[in-house]
Image (cartoon, rainbow over all chains, first blue to last red; front, side):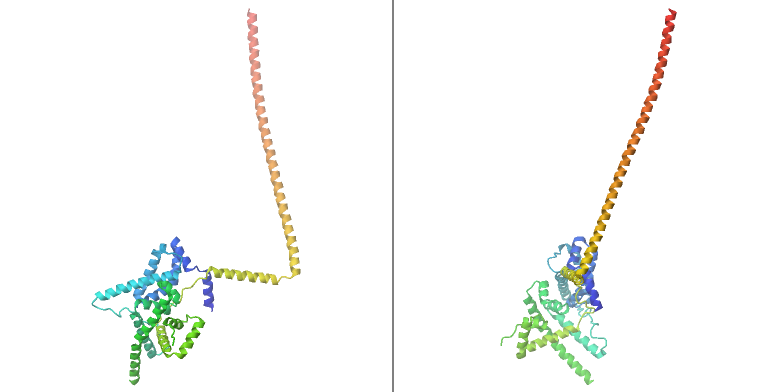
Length: 214
Length: 178
């Protein structure tokens, strides 16, 4: 409650993202840019991590997003929402990286698949027993793999809606497509994920039974 | 049976439908096993997606309050202030307050007028003093100049007198010689 009140008071005195970006554009204001970075660093890093499945790449892409934002601040038009603008910049960088990565994998003889992927130490409450924790981690790993198997367009919608909590209307603005298209992509993505996770779930249950038998 | 679209079901899953539509969809789901299965499969995926959250996920950036909210706060404060003053002031209090304010204002105005008058008077006296000093200074200078002229004239007169005497003596000696 105290934190919420403090946040409310802080928010009363804070400038909006659009105002901050305008100051960056007009005066190269470093304080305004620092505010934008502090507000958006984590959401952008999360988006990049979900899209690429690689925490190191996500870190690089986040930095590149802010570099691009600063370098091209003169091109910023304050007619739309800043959030839509920054999501778009970050997503384009993710798409570029995924394309580069695809080419790298095609030309490389040694596949480094799985080497740099995000481990998910954050999964499950620490109070849980090791067995439960292990199972939860395995399931989370399966979910992450399934997400990475989705086509980029579907993955984008899932990440923005489910993890970044954007409304379908907001996603439509970011992707410049009709809201109905976003919803149908989301429906398709959910169906594909259900199919991808079904065999993993069956295997998981089989392993559980074997463990119980032992 | 007329099934709802997948877009409708996904909106229902993420609670982005109107109450009316939600009610319609729920009614349909009660009687349609196929749609229930579809939605249930998605709900399972939704639960699974929730298992893999990135650590320290900053949900949404701190969204600053818009100027509209500032305006709303200002209006509320003004209204409260006005209402407080309006309902806590009786008629008698208002009369007393008005009388007190009038006295205070009158005194204040008198003081201001007096101060202004005094300042004008002082300025006028100072101006007169300056003029008098100027006059005396000029008088002294004039007198000094006149004295100088008088002294110089006296000296010149004496010199001329002496020269005339000498000339007279020379003239007398010439006539005696003849």
